[in-house]
Image (cartoon, rainbow, N blue to C red; front, top):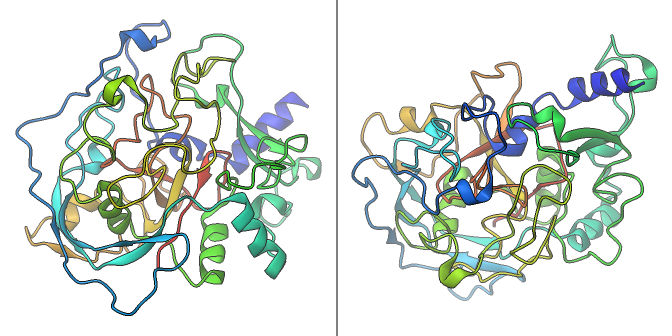
Length: 379
């Protein structure tokens, strides 16, 4: 049975590594030992002279228009998009943020954006109103997986499962499990619950689930460019949504992972939380957005290609309201259509993934939910 479980997990969540950390091939240090947090630097290596230029915000905003409940106005304008950080983590895992280069100029129109990630209460209201059933709640069909044993075709999703001991960080299958019964109501499996967690971000939603909610709410998912403009809060070239220091005055500014990854009880919870946190527990960015870094990954509307920034900036002009490539392509997994994800999650760690850095990118199979993926909407 163990082999069968592994097999169906591999079939149904084959792209979980890109969902989890935004890249497909991990380059790890040659040392066999697990990297300890104390071995890591506070500041990642940044290549060359900064290519960031000042953000130029639009001055106009809607007139005689009441701000929608739970949203804030993002003025839009012209800004420098991308990252010149060369290390994937603060522990100098090299060469895997190149899809966020080069830094290039982009213009976006103004828009309203949810202050927080969509919560369990909000998503429940949508489900009650529409009867919507999420992907994780639907049993895979024999037509979709004709070679799979019928007993393996069960509804469920991917759940982070800590390892009992230290492991090398080059095999993500060691800390992810496909769990029967895992869905938005039961994020870690059938015995888990969101009772009393109405203000936590909803997770275990696929891209289509998020887009369906957004349409019902009269909103949409942000483009990648809109998301980054909003996340930067009018600032230019900062490493994080809150500045360029990971812990200003010694305090964490986001729900991320501290300690030894990915072992049991490895997260020390120095930021106040282990696992997801309620929304709006940390200071908002200058535009009034909470949890724009950490907590849960956020779906955007853009298809993912690794070279998109190179393509869009090739002519040297300012890209106006870019909507991403027409078709997806990840050279590491060319058969899996992926959407861009942004912001990192509670599993992002300085040992393995620092994708809470504001200019970096994540990616994930648009049909693969997990217990660290959520979303927020714009209008």
